[in-house]
Length: 282
Image 1 (cartoon, rainbow, N blue to C red):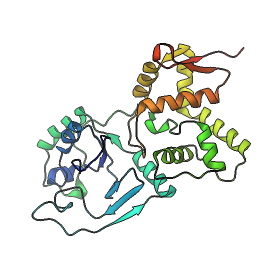
Image 2 (cartoon, one colour; image 1 turned 180 degrees about the horizontal axis):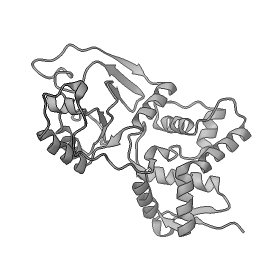
Image 3 (tube, helix red, strand yellow; image 1 turned 180 degrees about the vertical axis):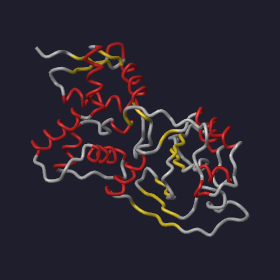
Image 4 (cartoon, one colour; image 1 turned 135 degrees about the vertical axis):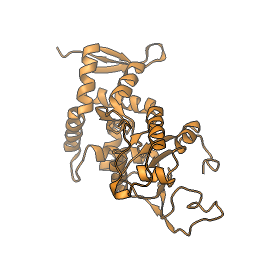
């Protein structure tokens, strides 16, 4: 599948990785270093049982086929599988986003711990009696998810979509807008003024934003690198249904903050680096 790709964008892969799956060989632990070498991220979500392949064109394939040689019909003893090509709607994206928010990123430390535990694992344990690998560390939870950041380029994009022009979900811009409508739980039927007040309230009271504002008030100004580092330290990396470029996310955040706090926040580009400033109200 990677050989068939025509662009250099990374693929996010979400696997179940239950102990019994790894012990029996149903799931291959070595997929982690393979994907890492290809610049792709691997996430784990122990609740999933779906086989869903999502493409940036807003298309997906839902199928009985696991991502294995037998499932993909590339081995001598391939399975007989079935599947269907589907178009995703807003309801689908909402469910997908909620699922992805409960996944966590695999790191070298986690991979090595599981690999060590797997060597000691008793494969004779019945699946319904399986317990998590002893000694395998649970990734430390950070305070926020990367999906807490607004994805749309600006609130104006939300206003335009909501009031006049429906978005095309096949475009990344459309999926970013829908993402924000979902995370801020924006209801239908609001007037323009009501919408502006509602989004302003949801954005400024979001825990991620209130914590960042505290940091900015303390520092008075932060370079682009400092903001990015703060986000890395505070936000858990989860897959999102749009291209996750942190640089773009931070640029969007600057625009949202300047809109929400016009008397306090501004930013410019001294020496080609975006710097954000806090000014106390008189």
